[in-house]
Image (cartoon, rainbow, N blue to C red; front, side, top):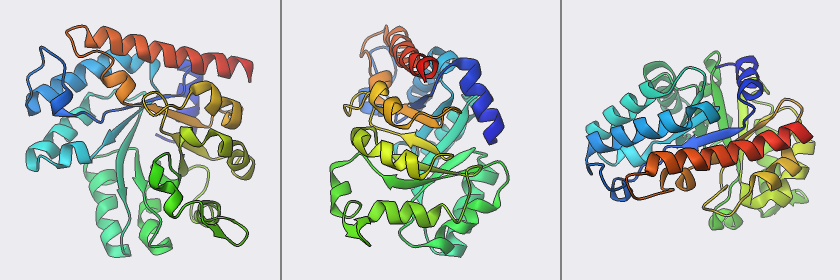
Length: 269
């Protein structure tokens, strides 16, 4: 999905919502078998419940990779369930020496046909450049993350500014606004405003809304653009809105609440 299509879907659905499919077998609701088939059925119902309100789905590959070949198949089958009007993201956080990253890029972009992949920039330009070689695909680079450990490296001062800013500035020259996004955590909403000023045309993938404490309003107040510019991710708050048989209805209700918050921000921007 290219930039033009993504922006058109944001406008059509009046939404910025990205649903994270971080499906945990141990948290499947009552009535869903705790098996690979159960994960796939659960994902199917979540996608059906949320698709009218979502512009993207993010599959955290670790939740599937842990099961080996069966998990990879479940991930592939889940990907097929996602309608074409939504951006598909492999939350894989890959990044290695050039020839290895080339194989990762082929795996997720060519073989599995994801629209986007999250990457870690620590090893430098040659570790990310292979991902930029695919047309109409997106590289989503870690910037300022929402986890507690982000303070260990990301906010350290380098050249009179936080290290994450230096990283994002450098990476921005390797791609462009048509193929590069940044991960910027919702729990760091106070920093989003300055990042948006520095990167006015790039999309931000924003985790941390819902279970981690971030809010759609805070994110949009600080980083919304005329073209949208945000993919606001919610995972646990949607997936596990209920542990009972009404999980699909409760997931839909949570998705509508988040979409409505996005729609209000878009209207008022």
